[in-house]
Length: 175
Image (cartoon, rainbow, N blue to C red; front, side, top):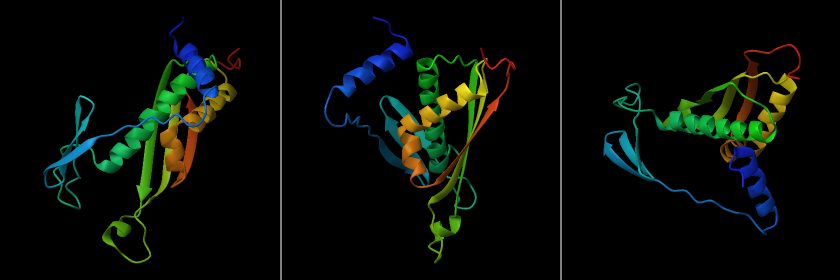
C-alpha cells in the first residue's frame, strides 16, 4: 500500500463515501490566563502563547494576538489543503507562500452603536513556484478552498479574496 498524500486522500475518500453521515473530528484546547492579556494554551503536547499588542490595550506584545492566530490558522489550513490537492491533481509545487490579511471594525470592540467587531474581510495572496499552468494551479486553489474547514467557516462570516501569483511560469502551459 502506498503512503503518499494522493494515495492516502483517495483511500480515505473512498472509505468515507461508503459510510453514512458525517465523520466529525473533534479538537480541543485548554486556555488559561498567565497575566493581564498574556495567555497560554495547551494544544496536544504543545504550549502556545498569546498576548495583545501594547497599543491600545496595554498588552505585553509577548506573543501573537488571538486575531493573528486566526489568520495563521487559515494560512496553515489552506496551505495543507493546497498541498493535498496539488498531489491529488498531479501538480508539482516548488514553493508555496500565503499572505493572509484581515480587518475588523475596532469600534465594535468598544461597544459603539452601529459598529460590529466581526471580521469584515480576509485576503489570501498565494505565491507559488510551479511548472504547471496557471489554470491547473487555479483549479488546485479552488478545490483546496472547497475542502478546507477553516476557509469554509470563515467565508460564511467575512468576504474572502484570493489572488494567485505564479513566480516561475514557463510559458509552455506546464505541459
